[in-house]
Length: 78
Ligand SMILES: [Zn+2]
Image (cartoon, rainbow, N blue to C red):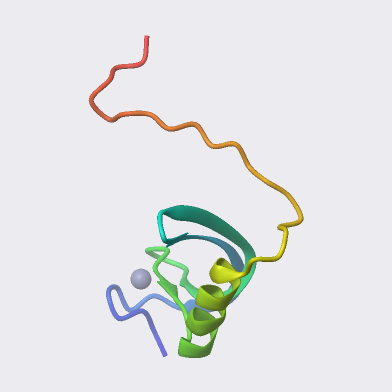
């Protein structure tokens, strides 16, 4: 099976996914996926997508928190 956009080779990798759930941003690490070696497109299997949803909704205390800078595209950095 190749990439549907560029026909590149897909390789199994663990990636970091950012997911939005009810206005909250959740970062999920070590998600198994197939990544195109040419264009970088990621292919998640349906079971993995469902598990991402479940993890994003989890009420359990996360092992760590990230502080993320938010910037506007229209503002030029000095
Ligand atoms: Zn590709």
